[in-house]
Image 1 (cartoon, rainbow, N blue to C red):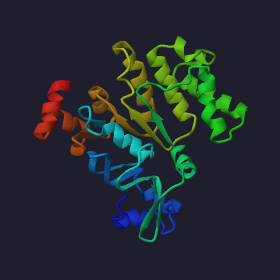
Image 2 (cartoon, rainbow, N blue to C red):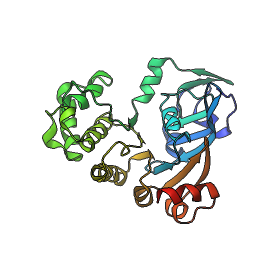
Image 3 (cartoon, rainbow, N blue to C red):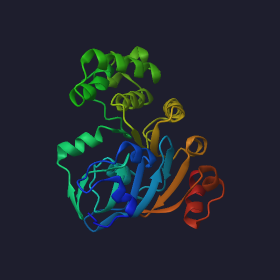
Length: 279
């Protein structure tokens, strides 16, 4: 873990590793990555990634397979440990604590407490097959947040209605379409009342006719002010919904900016080549 940081990073955490005060935190972007690096053995997957996502903003990340997009998402909630640089969510250093000039990794239980505020929706739904839809949604709020069953069920019922699945509470995942399972996965993530939602190619495992129903839910979330980072190949969604678009390749940010500008008038030759194949 790199010990270098900007002065703004020092402002985000005290020397004891405490999060920033509420007033200072409100001025922080929801996500700030500073020179983030990640390697698997001799393979460097992320090479000094620096970017910011404002509160209530939607960032879409595009790029070819193997460019580091999913790894970057997993670093944000400390499912992967960074090898250099720092990641902050809501002004709080993720996965580590700073004491003076030194950085210490958090105990797994402390890291899990941070992670509960960061929802993640995966490609393959990851629902528990032996639990009903309702049970899938209330599991984490009850176990992690110690929420009472009645309150958890009430919230889950509201969320199922929000994603258009009010009639599927007693169904098991195997009886649902891929699009329905992904909408349940979104409801499950929302049940933890996260401050940030990460989407890792949420429509890539779906049949084409089911993509729209998931994107509609995501558009609704964006309209409600949820901060989201979305790894996707859905260029229409990026153009319509995203506040910023990042193109990654080879573990670096090649180009970033307004989605409409990047998509219609890319400045980098590598971006042009990629978009010519996906548009």
